[in-house]
Image (cartoon, rainbow, N blue to C red):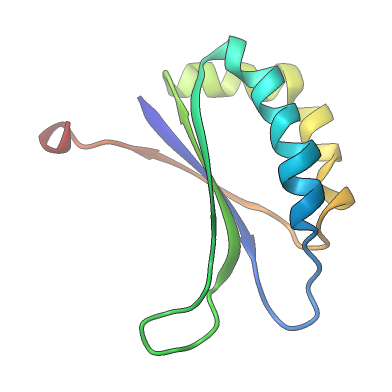
Length: 106
């Protein structure tokens, strides 16, 4: 299993339409990618840092896939459709990170 983190930077003047994201974008992601190895999709909204500063990321999608290969195939197959939807809900560039679960944590 791997975890794909899709992180949307925050900051003054950035736009993020949470209603569109939750009501249209994430259902699209689940519909297209679940048959291709997406096991779970969790959304978290940044609210701050320990010192009270604004969060560096306003929203993060945490996507659990069967494998890096499954994510790669899903992204290659439906990525253009999914990624082209991003400007409909935000004006920031998403940052994507692929993570693995260490064996000791399993």
